[in-house]
Every structure is written in structure tokens, then in C-alpha cells.
Length: 194
Image 1 (cartoon, rainbow, N blue to C red):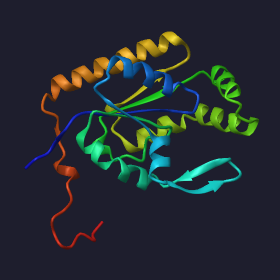
Image 2 (image 1 turned 90 degrees about the vertical axis):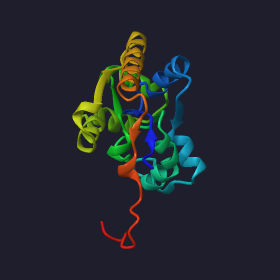
Image 3 (image 1 turned 60 degrees about the horizontal axis):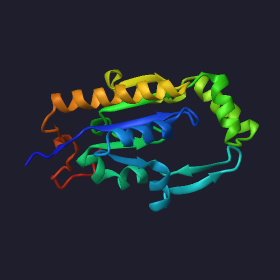
Image 4 (image 1 turned 45 degrees about the horizontal axis):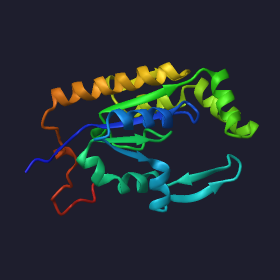
């Protein structure tokens, strides 16, 4: 039997680019989707494996995060909120939204969050170097990646409307979902091969 799944979307970006704001508006406009804040998954499934004192950040077992979401990814209709996008299998992601913010605006947002100067500079550098956008490009086909500006309130409205339009078009193109046959485990007994 071939299993089918609905669309899975990642909303990602450097901290402070507006992921949560986009998700909150998307929840109001598309309540039928399942929304996952990866911070909750990390806590619920004990995915922190260490702490980086220099960067003042938890080190997360990304494989454990993906494993915790496996059933939800297989079902689809999932919207993932995380600043990491390249941990998820390409075969299970249909749209990667990378939010981008002007550096002066991002600086103010991170300052408002009480980030220290080192953390602000690290995130601004990541935004300048397009780290998350490049991670997305390395993991996924270019055709499923969209980079959206997130500088002002009207950007959020416009971006969410674009995501909804994409979602509606995806569902029209895939009314019964897409096959998950490529994601099914190998039935052969020699499953140790990579």
C-alpha cells in the first residue's frame, strides 16, 4: 500500500526575523495545519545533548528532533518553526520559507530581546552571510525555497498570504497528497547498508 501525505512547510530564518509572528498569523488563517515550534519538541523529547558556553546556546541532537517528528512528517500538513532548516529530509519537505530582515532592524529586535552584544553580532553575521538561506540551498531543491523580506508588519501579512496561496496551489496540484513510498523502511534483512 502506498501511503500519501499532505504538504510540509518549514518557516525558518535567523533569530529575530519574525518566524513566530508569521506562524501566529498563519495559525489564524490556516487553523487546519499542525504547527510545531521545535523548541517544544526539544524540551519534550530531551534533545539537548550539551551546552556551548562560548556561544551561550544548547547543542541539539537534530536527528532526535527529526525522529520525534517522523509520524507527523509522514502525515503532512505540518508547519515547522525553527532557525535550523537543513535537518529534515528533502523528501518530506515541500516548502522552505527563509525570512530575511534588514540588519539595522534585526539589531533592534535582538536588542529588545536582551541578547548580549556577542549573540547579536553572531546573528547579524549569520544574516549578512545568508547562512540559513545557504543551508536551505544545500539541502533542498531551489524550486521549493522562497526567501521573503520580514522588515515591517505589512511584510508579514503579504508573506502569509503568499504562503497560503502556495498551500492552496499545492493542494490543487496534489489533491490526494504525495507518495511517501521513498520514506518507507527497506524490508530486506541487510538494512545495514548506507
